[in-house]
Length: 460
Image (cartoon, rainbow, N blue to C red):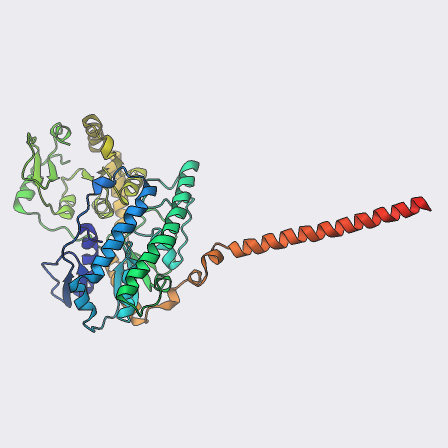
């Protein structure tokens, strides 16, 4: 996915593999300017990436997003495969031990694994979801697992469960009837000898999931789904001198007028040089070392759009969060953060100065939010193995065991109607109806015979 946050995750995994000695080829629209010293790290850069305005999606009806997604992701996939730099790599006759692909509505890219005759590893940047679960036969009951594009909590009302179930069915129909056929066409155009996508789509050795119970809802996982959420979080580094002085001098650390009312200092990522009438307690910057700032002891609150990376980082460092979600999975992440008691969510389209100020004061002055997020931080850190080490282990496991087919669940060998037991239900219905009909015929026959015998007795 051509977005910086997705690149940060993919790059963290690629760097981790290179640091333990693997030769890694990273395909993305971004370039690694400081490659790892160990192994070999090569960038295949996809230039001319399309920029998206996520604010256009903030109030979009989730049911109407599918045509937009179909067009956009088909375009992204096509442009990736036809890019000259990518084509050069495909024609290089190189050998790869494994192919790792981000599972993000780009299913035609699975042809790459077939092209290089390598095991396929999927990487989900948003954890287990409806784009991943069917591909490995993972159960995901819509009764208590909300779709990633909805803003529901697990304790859904009846109406929300109806909407969630409808959305699940609608999205799967869209994938099977419209999206997958188009992706299959794109794949066949570039990999004409590859099997159909209906085969390749269900051929992943493992799925690496950017999720963990401390930030995500606990959900079922089949054996080849591996949670590595938090793997991209690095030990904090010393802040640049200007930021260090700014943070160190803040006795209490935390849109314009609301910030101006605070006694706390504010760091605001802002792409312009200045803001008219900027309050003196605000420091602007086009880029900040987010993880290092969250690790600073004077940081009291993190205001974010609610992306999963930011959510994981704020939980890891134990900082309460104020989310203003725009699109994608942000609304779901914001709902989870609120449900878990680590922050409050506000709607961007209905944001007012008064509402913003009240929420800031509540989060800064009520200790329950900081206490709760500290507990969540302990959950995220308390693990037997570092998540990046886990990702490296399972990647090497797949390579060592030729794709590790023994992790594949039997559900993938069933057709959709067999998996849903529709054939069993049809059989039971047929037997039940047949039994009722036969019983009816027998009872009717006995009744008629009894009636005839009665009539004979009366005549005699």
